[in-house]
Image 1 (cartoon, helix red, strand yellow):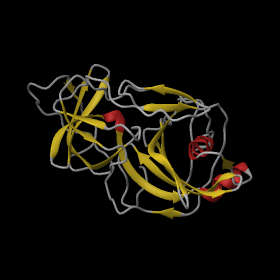
Image 2: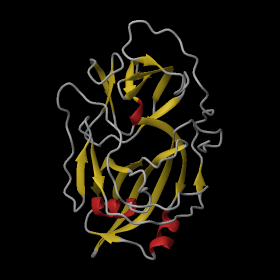
Image 3: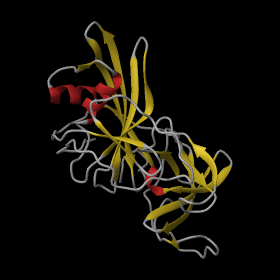
Length: 270
C-alpha cells in the first residue's frame, strides 16, 4: 500500500459542515496553530506549509468488506427537500463518521438539510452508520439517508466515509523526518505529524476526533480530510507517545485510510 506524495501543510476548511439550528459545542485546545470553525461548530487546525513523501510497509486489513460504489437508481422521493441524486452509498453500506471534533456530534436529521429537526447525534469516531441508498442535494450540500442505532434520518455527506485498511505508518514517518519527534503536548505532537499527511491543493483539514490523554502512554486521534482524491478522502491517525523527561516522544502511528467510493474485499480504496 502506498501513502500520498507531495504532502503539504496549508489547512483550510473547504466544505460546509452539518449545522444545527442552535449553537453546538466546539473544542478549544491551546495550540500554536491557527484554528477555524465550520458551520457545524467543528474545529479544524491550520498548519504551516511543507511537502513530504511517505512509504508504508506493514498492513492490517479490517474485517469490513464493502464493494465498490455503483451509481444509484433515482427514485421518486415526494415531499423531501432538495433534488434526488444518482450517486452515493448503496443500501446497506457501512460508513464511518469523519472530520467531527471530539466534543461535538454529527447531527442525524429528520429530513435532508441543515435547518431540519435533529433526530440524534452520532459520535465523532463512530463506524456503524448504515446507508439506505438515497442521496439528495439541498442547496450546495449533499445529504444521504442513513440508520444509526435504530434511528433513521439524514446526514451531511461531507462527514462520512468508508473505513479502509489500517497500516503501521511509524517507521515510514520516522524515516522521512529522520528522528523520533518529541513535543511538550500530545496536541503539538499530532499537529507536527499531520504536516506529513496533509495536501496543499486542495487544502486539507485536520480535526481532533479523540481528545488527547496521557498516562503510561499518551494518545490522540486526528482526521486529515480533503486530499483532492475521490477514492481516498483522507486518513485517521491514532497516535501514541511515550512520556519522558524531555516531553512526549512518538511511539506509534496507526493510519486508517478513509475511502470515498467504497472499499474492496481486502480493504483497499478502489
